Image (cartoon, rainbow, N blue to C red; front, top):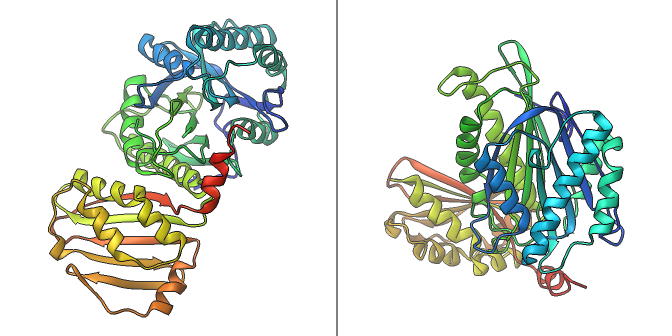
Length: 411
């Protein structure tokens, strides 16, 4: 497995670009992704009952098992809670994208062959005049060059402070297979499949059924194990397109699939972690691992409780080695465990320190603990000594700036 310094258009047959359409004040706000070949498609979506129009559109494409050629994405406006008008605008984005691509590339693409994603403010109608004008300009700019991938990644950002892109290559049957992804998310992050969007491309040949199964299991171990603020968005989605351009086939329960699966999961874990590292106002990146449980499900409950606890998050912001908040969160997680067997250890580049042993506090050096907690990345290890199952998750601290950013979000 080799990490590449490339973007979403790195797999064979994919092109991308992004531009400024005028929906946002300054930054790029419209991105397009295109495959030269029809793609197998998989998607996982928000479990929020309130769902944006693009979520509904993409679910229909998945249900109908449509072949997909591309994705059109706007930022600055979520197209959520916009009623029938929002659904019509979403369809128009697909129609205009298909028409533009068909005319420029001289191929027959219908609206149903395009996916749509939106992110931004809820409850405001799209400025379709600006978006349609932007869509009309995009097809001729689509490119394999890195500038196109970079622009596409910029065009999906809202409060993000940096683009989130990863690309990996594996060799299967003597041929290169590339998996690439771009994501956005900074606040409203508590995926339960923030606005969290993730788009994955690959040139492997795989059935839609196997791709969907792989995506679901991967999301459960990656995006569904992160949290910034506990809010599950109306627009969360992870979309995967596989066009088979590499000529490599992968089938379930084969060594080839295992190679692909490992790389696919690694790429999505890295994207998920980048989202947390860009958490609104965050100053600390926190990894929580619970080990030694009878069940991974119970371990996940414990991880979730810790990474979503506001008291834990504020303690890390204040660089306070308050292990009591960790144990408290574990206790209300709903998991069945024996607190008298639990150890808690903090780790960072500055070292490690054991704070709790067999459910009892350990005398520790507060100054040394402070050195550990001053680091930007901190690991919390919870050892339960009750089994061989574990779980990992990722979160961040809770700072003054989070309140400021979200208090002024619409202005």
